[in-house]
Image (cartoon, rainbow, N blue to C red; front, side, top):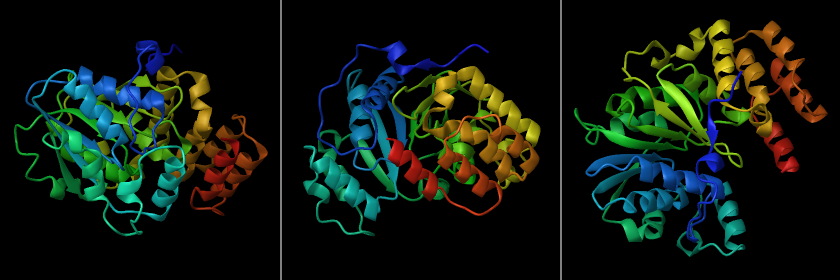
Length: 324
């Protein structure tokens, strides 16, 4: 099958951005993608939404992209803004490499980092507002923001990779997105741990991937048609009715849109057997595991997952971390 999706470097290979000091968890290529996408979807007077900001490195790039086109825009930044143990380690590591971590240096797990985030975004304070909540609570938290007629021109998502939370997100925000105009960026799409997110989005015919990052996991989707809250795939419990045919159809879409090497990177080729295991199609999962090239450690993890001996991804994260 032919590759449909373009890499970021194929779109703007020689594009560079000025350095910024915010800590972040995105690659330089992904920073360019955030900037480019914000710039391209700018419309005067429009609303933009970022879900999952951490300390605003991606947010600054969004703001830079929007500001390069005009001054009439508003960005809502949605996050739990709750400091976690691993955030402290990640910030300390980046501080050692010259990034500015003083706003969060004294935070303890469980404390809010919302004010630190706003300090990092002080240059754009007149354009941004924050909302606190988990992804699954977005409908209640943003009820007053998403009134009938409110249009969102750009959606940037780096939050939970679960099926129900993202189905709820599309169900709530979808009616405010404009077909042919709104672009949606999903971070960690091309990553085996995000297999539920991958299959949910590839199971949505109204979404079509058109950009991916070579050095990261982000994918940008075009909205081909209106999203209705009544879409069967967006309903509570829809993962439990996702059939084996739907799984294989979604995977065929993945092979159409992305080059083969990208579906191997970050063990993404495990996504198909993992989704089959998730739905209880063990015979099909066993067959697919026999087709993919895996290291001994990865195959041991997959087999343990198949037999129910592991329920989380800590072992695989350790394996991938060791390879990095």
